[in-house]
Structure formats: C-alpha cells, structure tokens
Image (cartoon, rainbow, N blue to C red):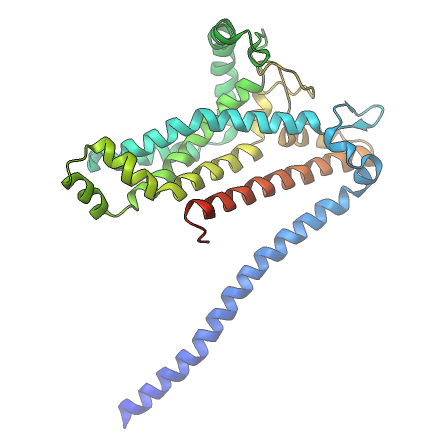
Length: 314
C-alpha cells in the first residue's frame, strides 16, 4: 500500500515537473528572441533621422563630413569586411593546423597544457592586443612586411607600398592573432568528437595518419570546423578597441590594403562622444544598425552553410 502511494506521488510530481520545465525553457528561448527584436527596434528608432535624411545612399556613399553633415558608410563597411577577411584568411590555416596538432599528434599529457595556454589568449583584453599592434606590429609592417609584400606583389593595386604602418592590412593581421584561439578551441573539440573507432578502422586498413586525418577526421568534423570559422568571423566583425588603435581611422576607400582605413565599430567608439548634433548622433546609431545587419547576415549565411555541410540537418 505504501509503495503504491509513493508511486502515485512520484507520477503526479513528474506530471507537474515536465510541463513546468517545458514552459520555462520555452520562456527562456522566447526572451532571447524578444531581446533581439527590442535591440533592433531601439537602434532603428534612434537611427530614424539619419535613415530619413540619407536613405539607401548612406550605404554606398563615401563622404564623411560632420561639419557639413554629409555622411556615407561605404568606407566603414569596406574596412570592416576587408580587415575581417584578411584575419580569417590568415588565421584559418594556422588555427585548424594547430587544432589538428593538438587533437591528433601531440601526446595527451602535453595537449592539455597547450590547449589551456591557447585558451588564455582569448581572455586577453583587446586593448593589450592593440598595444602589441602599436609597439610591435606597426614597426614590423613599416620596416619588413610592407616592403617585402610590395616587392613581391606590388604590381597589384592591393599591395602598393605605404610608409604609414597603420592600415587595413595591419588591422587584419592583428585580428588574425586575436581570433586564432577561438578557431583552435572550437576546432579541437570538433575533431575530438569524431569517434575513436573511425580512426582505428581506417588505420587497420593500412592508411597513414595523414590519410586518417584528411579522409576521416576532417570530413566528419566539417560542420564544427565551419562553425569555428564563422564564430571567429563574428568576433572579428565586432572588434573595436584593438582595430581602432592600428587601422589608421581614415574614412576613405583606397586600393592598397596598406593604406589607413576605418571600420564600423571603430567609428562609433571614436566619434560617439563628439557627436554634437542630432543628425550626427543618429548617423552613428545607423552605423550601429548597419553593423547589426552585417553581423546578422554573416551569421545567417554561416547557419545555412553549416546545415548544408551536414546534409541539411539543423
């Protein structure tokens, strides 16, 4: 009799707990969506004067003159995309190569400490990276990297030499250093998630370690690797302080990547406190809206790409 009573109490508790758990998690998910829409609504409402004044020309206009209140976001969009693209191109082979080394080649007693040290790099404040960029990377760009690339690829406009040291290329290289820990961390976890039996199966057939990695491990971890790249790209798109310190902060579109440029996040940080007119302030808020849109589009593309890479599964 007692066992029956206890069993009935447990069944009633489960009948109450399960719906409560479901409603609580649904509420949490709904709050995230609501917060996203509220953020978009808040930014769009305060950017409305700029949207009404410039319309779509704001996105492709290149003039940035606060005195005459003529504003265009094209130089900042170009700078943001260029620096992020450079960072991703440089950091991808290094990050994935390091992740393969840590997960497949190095002994386990050494892999843990090395992974911990790499994870610590992600916790370093961006302003410290900016100082490294000013005192190490900029002099190196001015004295070595810029002349070497210009001598090798100077026939292309993208690599015309410059004497500044500050510039799009410098910001991109600094960003690549900053996003490598994210690529390594997520990629390593994706590689370690591949079942050991898959590795043993192809090795038992006489495959080399290189063939095991390229034919089994990398294809099975593809979705995680792609996710790590787009996670790092999202970090690069929104980086502010370090980029502000090395990009040169010149709102112009130049052919050479060695010339100074500007980014969406950097112009907000640099000029928000100096916005003396309502239209100027609304323009900077519209810059934030553009950054929000660029980030949303990039992450949406990333989501679709990951779904496609795993055969259409969510």
